Length: 148
Length: 168
View (cartoon, rainbow over the protein chains, first blue to last red):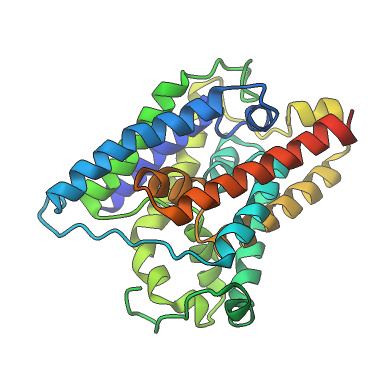
């Protein structure tokens, strides 16, 4: 399976690289309403994934027969607050998390700083989790090793 | 408009959207995995941070697929550069170079700051453009709809402020 994940990630990364989804100018063009490209990519992605998801959920099993289990994300004050912070970060760097890695792969040196920042930001969040939890109504931590 | 990468002409948006959908659906149909990239930041953290948050089940159980998938993102970008004219390190940053034009140190500081907001924000929101934007919206999940509206709005305001007000 590891090879499958690697191949899927490579396809995903190549498409992001060649479509403008990992391109600073195309991201700014989207936010400036000057370029349709990124809206087209996201809309096509959702419009094609939605019916596929519906079919897979109806089938209810993976190809090898395991029951499909989709973990739903919680809704809390962090959903909107965190997304607002992320939107600012996406605009400043011109990269959302996947494209940070794609840009590093392409050889964009500054993307290494974006990755260092993103890892530091995630580390900061994890370290402050117990303090942020009541503030944003985040779910309690599950015990180590248990599936969430 | 050409890409910053070798001035290449981008592929059609519908083709990119189709690949994204194909990868998302294949991950679920073959491997029972929900697409999501930003949780991978925690996999990286968990290498050095041994706190309860980074040892929770959602991290340890997802690592087996996320780590090779993230390696694939790097490889995809690398192959794209190699096949598109050759790989070499570059600082090219398009509009930024024309509008701001500060040195490398400023670019690194800027990118690090933006990265911190992205890393902290996506973890607080429990997802980014992939887990919320693509998967969650396709699955009609309310948190994902709210998250997407929020990160799009914040991105629009920030870029408009930067390029239409501050750098005008």
